[in-house]
Amino acid sequence: MENSFAKNLERFGGDTALITSDNKILPYLTLALLADEFSLNFPKDSQQLVLLAANNSLESIVCYLACL
Image (cartoon, rainbow, N blue to C red; front, top):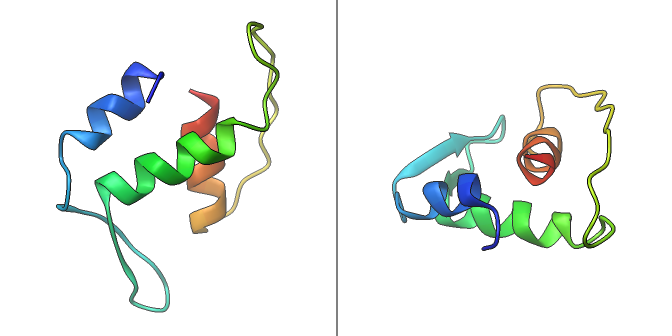
C-alpha cells in the first residue's frame, strides 16, 4: 500500500473492520486491499479534489478510504 492511512489499516490484519448489512464480516486487511484496488482508478502523480456522494454501503466506505 502506498497510502499511509491504508497501511495503518493493514496493521490490524484479520480483526473485524466492518459487518455489512448482510452480516458479511470484513477484516481490516481486506478493506485496505479493496481501497488500494479502487485507488488505481485515480490519476497517478497528481492531487485531485474529490466530491463523494456516499451512502451507508461497503462501496462508499471503500471509495472514501481510497480518496484519503
